[in-house]
Amino acid sequence: MAVVVVVTTVTVAAVQWLPFVEMMENWLSDYRIATLTAPQPQSPDIVIVTITEDTVQQFPYRSPLDRRFVASILTLLDKAGARAIGVDLLFDQATEEDKDEELRQVIQNLATPLIIGVIGEPEGLNEDQEAYLADFVPFDHRAYVTLFKDGIDSTVRRMYPGRTDSAGHFIAGFPLAIAEKIEPGRHFEALPITWRAGPGNGSPPFRKFPAHTLKMIPNEWFKGKIVLIGADLTLTDRHRTPMASIKSGYQLMAGVEIHAHALDQLLSGRRPPVLSLPAKFALAVTLSLMGVMLARVGGGLVATIVLASVLIVAIWAAGFILYRTEGIMVPLVLPTAALGGAWWASEIQNSWRERRQKRFLKDAFARYMSPELVNELIEHPDKLVLGGERREMSFLFTDVAGFTSLSETVEPSLLGRMLNNYFNGLCGIIIAEGGTVIDFVGDAIFAIFGAPLAQPDHAVRAIACAAKIQAFASQFRQTDEPQQWKWGDTRIGVHSGSALVGNFGSDLKFKYAPVGDAVNTASRIEGLNKFFGTTICFSEALIAAAGFGDVRPLGRCVMKGKTEPLGVFEPMSEVWRTSAPGQTYMEAYRLMAQGHATEALELFEQLEADQPEDGCIAFHAARLRAGETSDVVILEEK
Image (cartoon, rainbow, N blue to C red; front, side, top):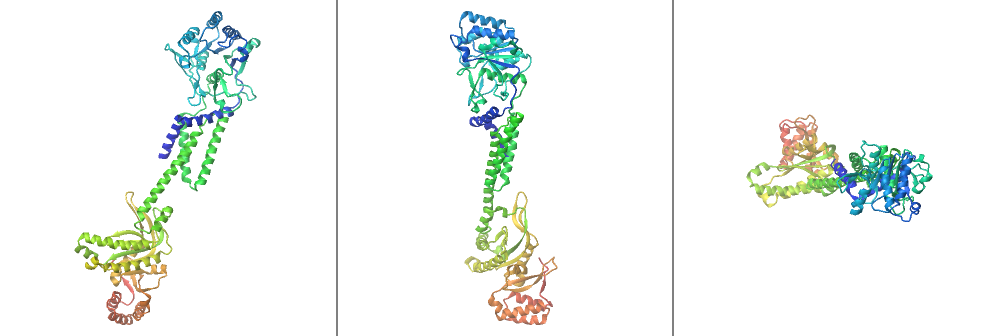
């Protein structure tokens, strides 16, 4: 949502106030106006009388226009019954006295509503010209013929509202003044101009008559018409309009014709086709949302660019069609910028999130798993399913025998140093074997194999890891400080099974870990080392998953709260399994498992005499002497 708000605000502001963006939007609007404005019949209300080159050639001087000639035009139109007359000619200086006076009298006595165009200092008049103009044209006949031009490309796109003159009186713009003269009491507003198209057969939108031909034209053609009089000269009073966006031969438009378009719009009540600012915001929000959705679709950069291009083409096509069929001018740069900006911002945001996720993964797992696994997760974070998934894994627990007593006798800083060195060794082995360290609990370590990335050989890895931990722990105990303080054996339990693994916890704190009965079973298997006098216990599920055979059976244990026994084993070398003691042990265990307690006890006692340090042999000999008759060991403790 933040992306949508920011992009919407920026794009709307850019289109409104950035010159080059505004210029692009204006040109696209101008082009549609020039090429797609629906044809209309010639205006039935407005007629233009033009001062052409042929007109001015009839007089000894071109400018100012002969005042007696102007007076004759006004008189003719008045007699013809014109509805109103607008004169877009300047009377800012004296000419021939008798002709000036004649025109002055016609203006004062004309029965037809009359508006005469004026300008002032902002348009380049000096004080004398302003004074003459104010004296020559009565105040109630005045209107500013100033054109409202765009500051960027000097194109006329909206009406001039008017302004206060040097005497402090408000004078309306030319079209507004004529409209108010014709329909007094009706409110007219200076708006963006809606340009009237011609009939489409090459005819202009307004009928035009050269001024010098009026005497030859029937009066009926002017009866009830609004007649605008102005120059249509090549180098005089011509201005750029939206029609200049195409090269059709008429690039500039006479000022009087521009006023005709504006007046026609005012009288017909046509509203400009442009969207309001709230509508632009709504459009930008919609396209920004589409841009955000586009960034989330995925499918690769090329596919996204193709889809974005299709959307932009569709937007532009809709913009052209809407103007042609409904007369609605939909911005095109705005939605394009909103769509592209939101997509780009979302891509940046996604990239930032991806980098943050990669940093999180690297920081979170680099200390607990192999660099290869970390890099794999960084490249494919989807493989780390958040929230949990069920998976086959192997679980490894370690524990240091007698650590509680050791912690009560060794100075804390020394104990901490030894423990850190011990952990460094174990974690290095676990990570090297592709395992993931899940937790440290006192002197114990809990690690898993097969997550967060699936490892088909997780059981094999766990077995190899256990053997290396046992070798490291044995060497560690022989170093100076651990040997001095009698560091205990490291006991290891490993089990394979199915468990739910993922990020579990609360919104404030969570941890990546497996949960399930298989985890509890693995922890209990580690604890069996105390009963059997061993340092490593493997479950039958583990050795089955690994296809591992270099073991000796320790017993089938029924854990507290369970009913089914679980076979546990101790890894042994091939040398031991083929030796006489090894073969004797396997035979003794076979007899015990088959219920031949007497024969089994005899062999276990023989082994006990030869190998009194073997805790497992002593454990079973004591059980059989106590009356047990099988290899099932029922555990009363967890």
